[in-house]
Amino acid sequence: MRKRVNASQALSLYEEQDMNVLSLLATSIREEINGKRVWYNRNFHLEPSNVCIHRCSFCSYRRENDSEPGAWTMEPNEIREYCRTKYEPGMTEVHVVGSVHPQKDISYYYNVIDIIRSELPAEVTIKAFSAVEIDDMCRSSGKSPQEVLSELKKRGVSALPGGGAEIFNSEIRKSICPDKADAGRWLDIHRAAHKLGLRSNATMLFGHIESRENRIEHLIALRDLQDSTGGFDAFIPLLFKSANNPMSHLGEIDIIEILKTFAISRVVLDNIPHIKSYWPMLGRELCQLTLLYGADDIDGTVNNSTKIYSMAGAQESSPSMSAVDLESIAAGCGYQAAERDSFYNEVKK
Image (cartoon, rainbow, N blue to C red):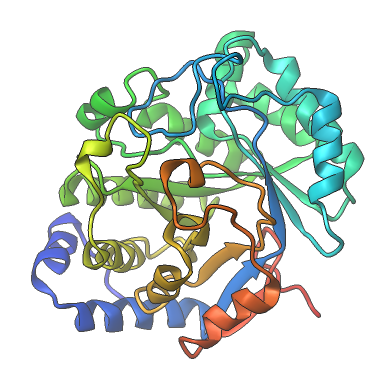
C-alpha cells in the first residue's frame, strides 16, 4: 500500500524533485487507479447569469448589474431555448454554474433546474450550482444547506460542481474574495451534499498570490473531507488567467509550475480517484501534457457553452471539441480514451 505524504513531504516534492521524477511518480499513481484510460464525457454548460454580488479580484466573468456591457441574465424562456440548442443526442451531462445575482432568490435557481429537467432526457445528469451559489440560496431563504440541497436533489440535481473553493487559506481569501463563503462553509456544504448522496467535484484556483504551502494545505483539507465522506469524484486544478480582471498585473505562472501542481495534486489526493485537466482553461496542448503528470480526465465536448475562462483570456475562445478530438489527445500520450457519464461509468459505444 502506498504511503500517504504529509505537508512537508509534498513541499519537498515541489521544491526538490525534477520533472521526470514527478512525472513518473504521478503517472504510477494515476495508472494504479485508472490504468491506461483517459476519461471524457459529452456535455454542455449552462451559465444562467454573470451579474454577481461578489467582487472576487481574480474574476473576469462578473458584471455589476444587468445594464453593464457584457452582462446577461437568462430568463426561463431563454434557458429553455438554450437547452434545446446546446443539447445533442448522446450527451450525458449539463454543468450549471454562474453567479450570485443580487435580485434573484431561491425560486429562480429552483426554476432553472425545473426547466432543465423538463427539457433534457432523463439520462442527462444535472450537475448544478457551486457551494457559493448554494450558500447564497441558504442565506436569502433562511434554509440550511441540507434543506436546499434536498430540494435541488428532488428537482433533479444529482451532483455538484467544485467551483468556489479558490484557495482555502483565510488570509488569501481576505485579499481575493473577502465576501464569499469561506473555506469552512465550502467544505460544510460539500459534506452535506455527500451525506445526501450527491456526488461532487473539488477545485483549487492556483497561480495568483498563493504559495506552494497554501496549495498543499488546500489539498490536505480536501483529502481530510474525502476520508470522512468519500463523496468527491474528481479534483480540478484551475489555473488563474490574468486577462480582464483586477489581478491582471500578476501575469501567469509558467508551464513547469502548472505541471508540478498537477503532479503534486495526484500524489497528495490519494483518496480522490480522478484528476481533471480542464481543456477550455489550459488549451489542448497543455491539457495533453498534464496527462503525463497525473491527470486522467479531460472533461468533455462542451459545445461552445462556457464563457468563464474565455472572458479571462483562455486560449480556447469558443470551446468545443468532438469525441474524436478528445480521443486524439489521449492517444497522443499513449492512452486509451474512455467515454464516461457523470459518475465515471463507462459509456459503451
